[in-house]
Image 1 (spheres, rainbow, N blue to C red):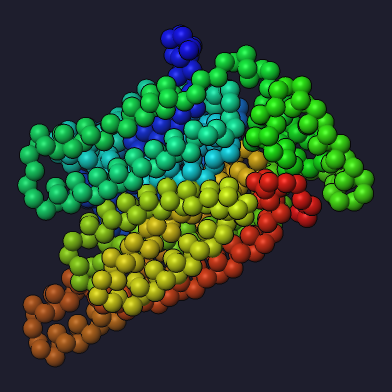
Image 2 (image 1 turned 60 degrees about the horizontal axis):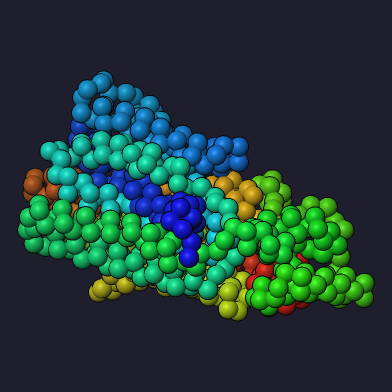
Amino acid sequence: MAGLKERFQAFVNNRWLVFVAAMWMQSCTGPGYIFGSISPVMKSSLNYNQRQLSKLGVAKDLGGSVGFIAGSLSEILPLWGVLLVGALQNLIGYSSLWLIVTGKVPVFQLWAMCVLIFVGNNGETYFNTAALVSCVQNFPKSRGPVVGILKGFAALSGAILTQIYTMINFPDQASLIFMVAVGPTMVVFALMFIIRPVGGHKEVRPSDGLSFTVVYSVCLLLAAYLMAIMLLEDLVSVSHNLITVFTLILFVPLFIPIVLSFCEEYRDPAEEVLLPKPYQHDAGNPEQDTREHEVVSSEFKDENHEEVDSLVVPEGQKRIAQLQAKLFQAATVGAVRVKNRKGPHRGEDFTLMQALTKADFWLIMFSLLLGSGSGLTVIDNLGQMSQSLGYDNTHIFVSMICIWNFIGRVGGGYISEIIVRDHAYPRPIVIAVAQLVMAVGHVFFAMGWPGAMYIGTLLIGLCYGAHWAIMPATVSELFGLKKFGAFYNFLNLANPAGTLVFSGVIASRIYDREAEKQARQHRIQSHISGSIFSGMLAADESLNCEGSLCFFLSSMIMSGFCIIAVVLSMILVYRTKTVYAHLYGKSCIRYQG
């Protein structure tokens, strides 16, 4: 029975504590997701038109996607330093906006306002980078669930921040900007020394399955709970005391790390030292294996970890020596192809420049751009899409797609982990299925059938979320963990690039063209009727489009691009089958990469 001191030390250095702390940081540090809530007060206070407000929105999206600086700093600074920089950017950017909106300082020119919101929302990239880098390094054998859960909580942050704002009951809407400036900064300051890579055991333990099951259950319950209280507060009048109780319940999962830490089997540090060296290897650092076995690719793993671990130390070392001899013998007879080319192989640590020369990396990038970009276009235009189909309550669809996005991220990571863990099959196969389902979701939006908004929102939300759970994990597996921060932030460029093409070029132009057609029809009818009132009404509605035709063509185009993304993902699956067999297979097979 370990003493209290050892238990406390184990708790402080527990990777589950880091994981849950990162979950809660992600859930409170996503100000970009509530831009729709702060944009009305900015528009009215600053006398902006919709086009000016859209430019602010574009600057906000770019700030949340351009994370090269965050990725670079994660390689030279401790993660608490990365989080500190992000918190300061968040505080400076959004507090400046709050001072301007409330009239405490003069209004800046539009370009300067875009810079401020870019700086403020760019802090989010530092939070994402630190959370993912630390937790993926702490759980190198469970990357799918870890990335899915963390990205899922980032998607939920908008709903959680809105609920906290409702509980505090600020006197005006501008106070929401103040809360966005101060709230995430305080959360980061409280957690920045906890979120870090920790030493110790990083292999899969039998208790990990139960622990992830608990976390998944809490995630699903939290999503359902948020959906329920949002609907309840929207449909009926709820007292402020009851809203406070509802919000405080959100913090119950903070006790998860305590339970997981003290229920996890304690292992004396001296026992870790006595373990065979291959057992102590960091699964996310294949370069270590490469240095010891230069002839063999670093993707080879021990034939059976559990079998070796069950042996006493001398017997385990003897078994490992036998396995090494077999591998060298196999290389001699040609069963294993020895690689003499320079540079890392799949599964080893790449730099960003090395990864950019690989076809696999660009297959991931373009597949993500087509799939995620088309999904984000729906999310950005969901209000107009629902209005064009005759729905008055557009906010319900915005709330629903946030929840489905969260479930897609959590579920995508879980399902992809089953695929690679139980079947040693490439993780991108799940993305291919999600993109095929997303193509169907775009068809529902195009047709505008009764109930199509509900089904389309469900399908697009789930599949969009799955992209951001699976693709980062895939990149970490194929190109290593050492430069994961740079890889992740480069992948983030797929979002603004996709929306620039799908929303800025395709969907907006087609919508405006259909709106102009309807406006001309209104003017013709008003001219025939000779009604001044009808003419004024037509002028007011000239920018609005009604009916399924508004987004029919753009939705069908996006559906077609999703099919192209499926093809790209399947090519990636074909190219990486042997890699995943080496990474997760039960035995070593010939590497064809």
